[in-house]
Image (cartoon, helix red, strand yellow):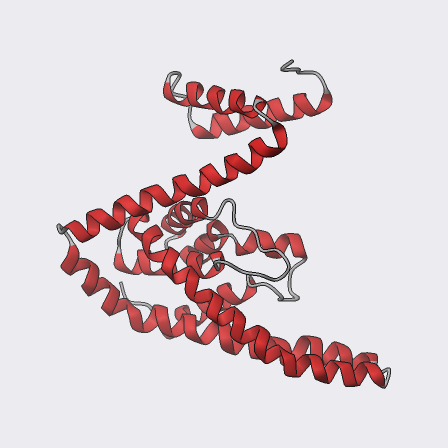
Length: 254
């Protein structure tokens, strides 16, 4: 599949809009849009295949379920993994498992972009300090939004647009040449394990706050899916209902 320059730029804008420090969303909405599931869906819409985008994005998202950025520290860039990983998967027509294994190292490169942005913003912060000394509120707002976001657009949109546009032929040819080799099997296995690791980390965080009682919920979900063959959508709806009943005090496990 070949993409246009406009599509590549739009994918870069999706990554930019979901990045930390953009003023276009509230904190919660920005965090939600940064998740690979949402980034993958947006990339899928741009590339004309929202279903595949949602599937690949969900697979990548499972790896980052326990991803936390505290105090401005960023270990991995899940937004970059969601946009570039999903784009390469759709362009190369590869499986979600392979996309996950490609997305993880891609997410590490996002740390470089983040550090370049934070380092370059030092100049802007000093300009804001001078504006604050003079009491010029309009200049503070200007430096905080206009130069900062222009600099961020350059850093975030251009590399992603170049990667997904110029990398289409390279990635496609590489994956085609690896079909039927142990390399693809290895990438598929890694891509299967990584979401399980993300889910396990999320479970650990839940159990640490709720206690061993959480195991009963996990066991109930496993039984409903494995032995009663209920669809995940139905299980999710039942979980929401049970959580609401538990919160209202109508259901007790003790």
